[in-house]
Length: 119
Image (cartoon, rainbow, N blue to C red; front, side, top):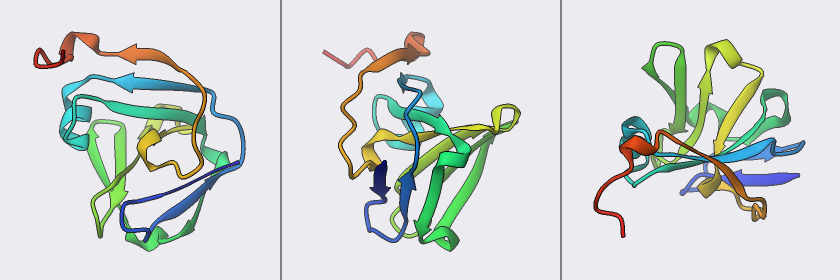
């Protein structure tokens, strides 16, 4: 089991199940959402993710048709990314894990958008 939370601690979650794989997305939407060069995610079964505190404080944003991103409405921490057509899976931001994730990132997505300012 993994646990996680947002920056202010208002939203807390548990993942009861395995991380299928971890990815780093370099798309410009992830860059803007995270305010960083990329968005790191753990892909899990939607049924494995349980919000244990602060569910009412989660804001959802449809960033493009069929894609929903969720974040804490108090501190703005990015929590999840999900496609409507694959609703049985959800991507949880690795930076919000409280339990260290010791797996490897297995895929890098949209590398054509990787910023040139990186070393």
